[in-house]
Image 1 (cartoon, rainbow, N blue to C red):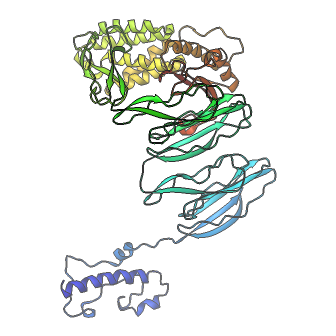
Image 2: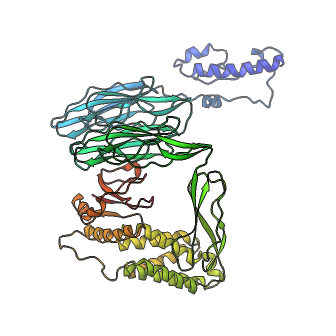
Length: 629
């Protein structure tokens, strides 16, 4: 590098340094002696370019570099506030003022006292200050015992300012913190049912891992039939969760957790299952060949049977069962998987297709296949108006029980009228309420005409058969959960997504009007007592229809809204004999119902009753919610 180039770079660097130093100077006199300030120009921070004479004789400023102006240099290093003012208010009265450096933490003020109220903390986090803040005290009416709760990071730094939690209530945890080179895995103490002043510290695992959130809930010890969260943890993918100890509940005995927390691969809400009454139980644990836990433990009532877990797998071996019986449990027991060397596990492969006139999938073939082997597909079924195009998934190298479905493509020669005929046959088999059936017929007729209307309409509207079949399938899964008005909205929302953009709004408005007229005709509500609320009437009809679907083995239950918890409980009265009969165990759970608080993390924003029916032992058992305000 030439001496000239080096000197030019030095000069440029010196200019920036001098400008930064000069900016805060308040006296013009101090800048006059600086050789980089032009004669007669004593404006603070106005930096001039040194003349050639002030540099060595052989230095030249090249034109392409340019000469920075005083304004440019001032823009290059804007002044930045180094501290901020934090003001604390009690109602409208100024309680405390602090000046905090950027990134610092304000000091916790003295707790204010307000007659007839309990202080709960401040409404804004002041653990990291990066702006001026006005913070207000939070109070709740009444006098309560509270405990100070503070969340800190691994190094003791506050993650959020302290809060004051009413005795046996829950603290609000901050967002999961981040630490370079580490993965957050939870807290060293649970922020639930706080009973004393508590400092809760973030926990990390060195390295970067994918994690899943497990949230554990158990019955509330004082509020019968209500559940509350007692623990959360972030589990590294493939590892096991560590659930908290369920809170003892008078009148109940813990059975097991609703969801397996072994080999975690997804976020899960895990509920404690209970026996009614205080009974003797025994811990039953399942282990694989290597001594690792295979499923979550169960606590089985004395003399009862353990739930059969899913079969484990071991390369080069065939699973042969468990080394101890699962029935008549009379003591704590550890049960281990048994394998046969040199044999292979056998899995079931099922092929499904559709046939003309049937809405549901039909089992075409069931085959037992050794692990790693290929299944043999059957001849495809005949589905009128459609052409078989292959199977949706591979049936080679089978590694587990597998369901495989046929793929079909529509035959373009089938008319809208023919599709409407088949569609009506499907609708009639569903035994829907008459006003809903009529509305769907009306919709089918309208769209069938569009299909037969020529290419111009076909480009804007998808094939009618696919649309209405999808609508019906969707309604099957949710019917009973919604009123006639909601059905109308659901249908039109769904159709809106199917139309081309060009005429979507016009077509949907027309369908909307037609459905409005049809759905407002007639009254299909069951005869109920005169004092039954509208929501109760709606729910009772929904529940009646949902029970029918349960017995038929289809549908996923109901979602009903009622005005009160009492209304919600009434809806279950006529179903209790069915739900409380001795269940058939499956890995998913058993029959029953529970009353839950609001669960905003999983989308349930109101208190509700959750019910389920796994008595058919299938994974498509009915499940639903009844919400109350």
